[in-house]
Length: 207
Length: 280
Image 1 (cartoon, rainbow over the protein chains, first blue to last red):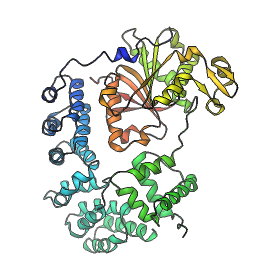
Image 2 (image 1 turned 30 degrees about the vertical axis):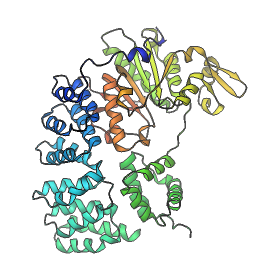
Image 3 (image 1 turned 90 degrees about the vertical axis):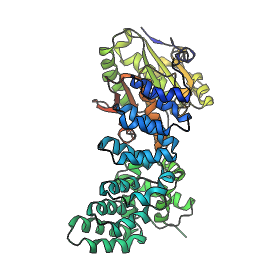
Image 4 (image 1 turned 180 degrees about the vertical axis):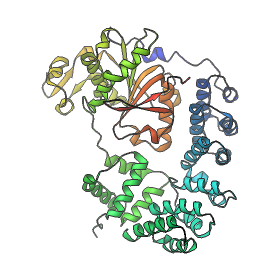
């Protein structure tokens, strides 16, 4: 036996998929029994600008994590209003994996997520507010520090503030100084808030 | 005015951030290397201070500056037997596992990408011929791809400098190369053993036909991609691999930060990533 070139690319290329690739057919294939067919449909739907609703619908019922991941990659590439709204709805899911996957996807959409961030950070559900701060962790947007300041100045929930102050330890500048001092005063009996705030202040003063 | 030195706090802040974004971890011993490049970019971007530069790095929507800095912080070199421990892992652990479970006699398929000038693909070929007893029982196809057609032409030509072959054992150099003036010409047997193809990993129509691979080598490429492109690449490799197939990344790259599609496999020679045997 040996090293061979039995199957050059030209031959591999003949192995085209048999199913139709138009947008309507691809949306139907999102519910194909084969996960591989569903993954390929989700991947190819990136060429179909109106497919976010179908992708979100499938995402919320999809049980195969490999298909879910590819749906999320495609939604991130599409990044339209419907895709973002769908991702936000996943933050309220009971499925922790789906929530985390949605957070990861939203981190990749700074310009698309920015217009709704203020609203997310004021959501009635503190868990959703924590997830919104989690999104900020890697969101490349110039307002991140400002949003975090809003949280630590006004949010009544200690866990939401703790998540935000952790992040300020990394991204905080002197702009956050006053808000951090106020936070310590708002939660005088919370040792973690005191510790994380002092760390953030130390880092700011050293830069 | 000269840029202020990078403080310890700033270094730690930068190190945490850079690790999260790229998986590249700098030990304290690399402090001089990191500081020098940071100061270089602070000056090149007219940021004035680390703080201003870090804000750009962290919040710039395009990610362009992070890419420039990543390029500076990584050393992009290709040579024969680079990161040899993974080839050891291939012959000692990966291929024995794959062949033990293979239910047909079809050739094993290995995809190496990016091909660059071919050193990795030819290294795999040599390693199999020299160190894998299974080569007497199995046919193996090696396909090596790159987006750059000029580098592919160079790979097909198989002519290398002193620098490229410096880590090769003398015996292999004598066996597989012909010394010709300043160059080392790889032998025709190896040139004919590797299929070089042009592929844009980010283009679905380019990668769609790349299927049924048992092992993929994609080392030191994903560090140059943005987050979304890394995810796309991970998704593409997943469907290019057979169930139970393996993905080998570079030493500073980690699939765990990119995608949850793969299982981490820790072998004695290397950590690699595996598509679940039950994946459909």
